[in-house]
Length: 333
Image (cartoon, rainbow, N blue to C red; front, side):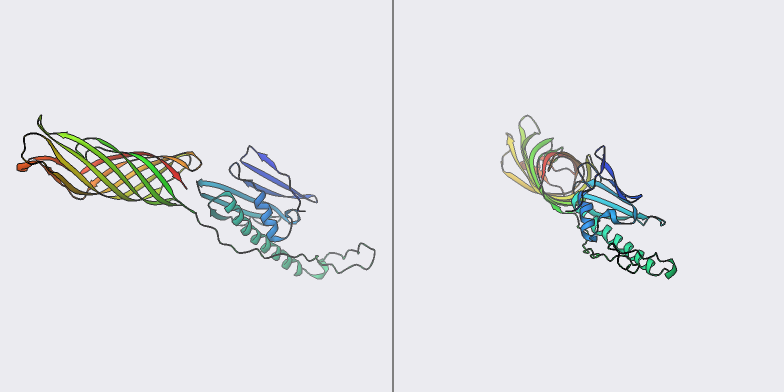
């Protein structure tokens, strides 16, 4: 059974593992978020090099694990041994603590194996007079030639660092507009998307129920809209909150119908609305896979339309720019 090494936990954030080896000791400096244990890393390194870490002539292995954002982790490690400089650090990324621990262990095992090969080559190059005296056999027989006992060292498997996984956000939202319908209006919407690392793309839709615009005591118009948007977003940072910048293209239909008295023709009119939608947003995690998202921006019209009463009297004209905002709950699958 493989030996389990004791370790000292420091505040749930990091730990230092001391491995006794004669009068010297090897240290594993492990720094990681709470819940990200070094056990899997140590086990995987030992499995790859087919040795226990306490048998190695290293002074220190330094490992730092950082959670940059959900599903985006980074591991950095370096090695050092007596009489040599610390090796350059290596950095790997993955979607979880276990992913980067596994990939980091493979890379560390390869580096350790390379150092072992260098040590063995240097020892073989020593002059014969500097070689250690042969030690007698344990049974008192003839001493064996002074050579290091062979040990099988397995070549670690060369695996590529896994990229960030795909996630699928589903959102229900309350949508607000300032002037598309001629007056502030509110509606409901939904969105679906694909999230990978810091990038997200998706589709959303919203309905603004009809509101009444009065042009006089006797004339008015009821106007509503159905809107769809294709968007892309870049997540700018985090945690604890995740700001993002988005740009979308909005396409929809605005409908209007006159109401009241004083005109001869009553008919429903429709106009195609399309616009660019730059927005800034903020995501606030509420729990596992659940997030509150806030968005604010503008719709910049790429065309304008008029809704008229009979005889050319204008009841409503779509704006050049309309302020937008939304708040919604998002499930990230």
